[in-house]
Length: 137
Image 1 (cartoon, rainbow, N blue to C red):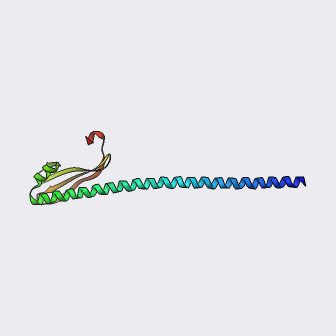
Image 2 (cartoon, rainbow, N blue to C red):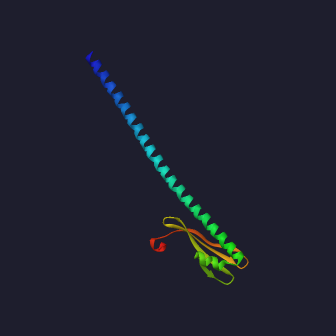
Image 3 (tube, rainbow, N blue to C red):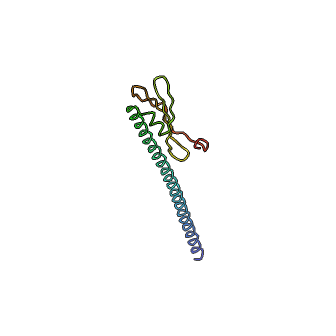
């Protein structure tokens, strides 16, 4: 009888060990899933903030171009540009106006647009660029 009780105890220990290992495995997978989901959430927040900042700068650049266009139509572009401090280059039949709109820390949207005498606008450059500390000073 004693042998039977010992076998029963060993069998019970093996089952308990298997249950403990299964619970540990499930717990490890749960922790890994949580960490992965948290990481993805933080990455999506950073992406959302970056896209929001870009489109805010994009809208501001479009507002500036609209203001410049109105100033050109009214014939007061020189006063407007002098007041705002934009870079202007005059060529044969057009003026090239360049300006920057900050997107985020270390990034800005750089825009160059050419305006002809016939009030026709051509976008020459519309891109985000990383700026260093020397550029921002």
